[in-house]
Image 1 (tube, helix red, strand yellow):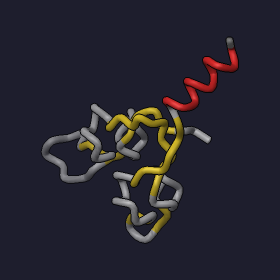
Image 2 (tube, helix red, strand yellow):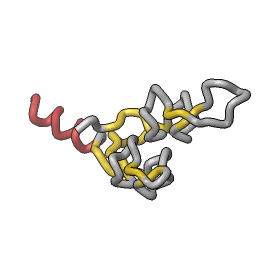
Image 3 (cartoon, one colour):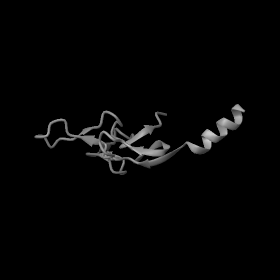
Image 4 (cartoon, one colour):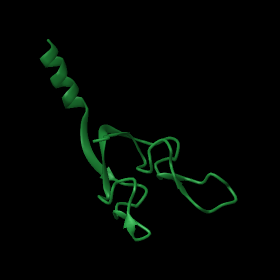
Length: 87
């Protein structure tokens, strides 16, 4: 019974790469490796993928509305996705 249930769960949920929102899949930000995807340009996300609700999938937010400086989202760590694989 456990094996059948585990196989069904594995069929429904799987990890797959998606584009990094912080660096826009380039792998670099301001000539350094992207901190959200470690320079890979994509992040592994548990599918079905869910866009981050806090930053609306952009990977960033502005703490101060009068400042144009973007900071990485504290919920998704800049990836733009929830349920990110931490491996």
